[in-house]
Amino acid sequence: MRRVMRRWRWALRLTVSLGIITYILVDVDWGDLGSAIVGVDLRWVAAAAVVYVSGQLLSSFKWSLLG
Image (cartoon, rainbow, N blue to C red; front, top):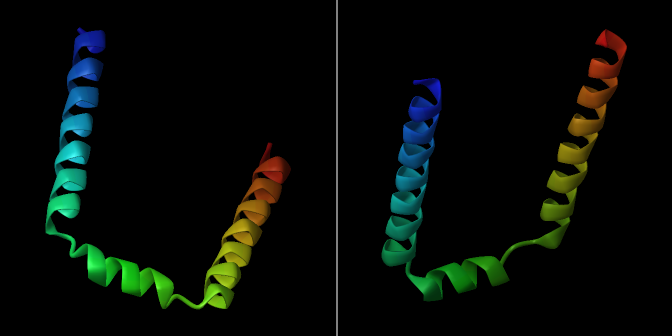
């Protein structure tokens, strides 16, 4: 019974995800998306990546202390 429920849950997640991706692909204006990507300041992207990786490192350190 649990295996069947897991498969149904997985199928539901897959269906919802594919629906969202399809909606985005159909609804997005590709010209606007392209100009938005070209206009991104890479310094902000790099700063966000540094903050994210730092948070992951701190989290792993915390869990190593708890473990």
